[in-house]
Length: 481
Image (cartoon, rainbow, N blue to C red; front, top):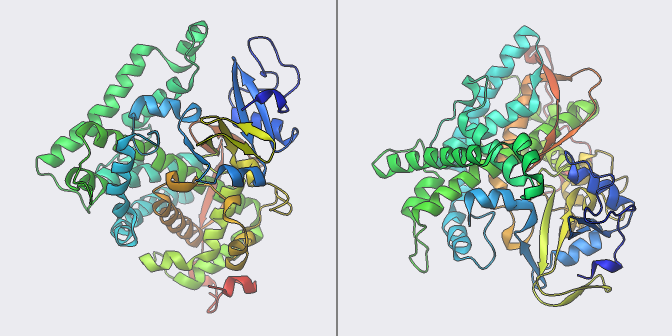
């Protein structure tokens, strides 16, 4: 794309480009505020690279058109690509391992497969409840993002490849997690000899990076070797499917290296995104007591007085308002906040911006999800935006927290089931009070999550409350199926 015709930030500097106003700790947020003042499309030049950013819903709709545009796997996932190669999330569109893995793994995310994961998700969620019960007795605050990460990591470890990280038995992160975070930080730092000393100070040495990658690979390889030697998992998992399933049409199988890469990808992507979504949902619930009361009324209507309910798989779909809380949190802060789209052929975006084949643009989801032409009062938290009737009336392109097209997140239903189950159990069990005077701050790594967000859980007195016997949802939209 000819970026010379696009608006850009003021004070562009020679060689460095548009660095004035760019916070290296929060590049996504810096870009959001920049673009919100420049229009639905703008460009930021960094070290000679023009980064075209789009936040307007109409332009995003065009970029999501699979006949004209495809996923670009460049800039934003460079660090992950260095670790996992051509895994599902990082493979280029024409790399054969993407289609092969996609077709082999699709059955692992059907409703039937999800039924098998439910018991494990519930068991891990109960470990989280036990941890928060202890905090409640001691009148202590909990670190929300850290505990959500413990839970989602343990869940994906057990359901993905039968591995227990024992995340709730550790005060410090598992060595796998420490190595994973360091490798991502190292890979995300610009690979420039001029910045090498800074990179070493901030992200560690190249030798440390190689050792971290080796630890990730060795951990997964040991699990794979044990499984091939006859070890079994608690339930059929992703690793079983990758080791023992062939492509339904060609009979091709994933090679051992790619199996390892897929597992590491699922661990990284599958726990960070869901933990962030849960953390944002809990933040907005505690910031809006009337929303929390309504969500608690819904779970009470479903599970009643039971101190320790036994949620069934079917129960999770009944928690419509809890799901809407999660959806609205993901609208405001999608935990994977951007994706890249590249032109399949020469085309014109928005009737005026010429793009050559291979040209790409970044979709900034927090802005697309705040387009006032689609979302009235876009910065206001309002789960009723996702009442069934309202959600169906909106064009599908305006809400894309799990990506778009054939490269959208394969684990979407897995993540949503886990998140709604966990959120429902927390709301049923606790009254939640945030750390005094907390103001939302966003931590940016591979994903987004609240920084420094603490809560004090207090056990609710279920037996002393009356529980609604009918649906607490008064809005007629919520009665629609």
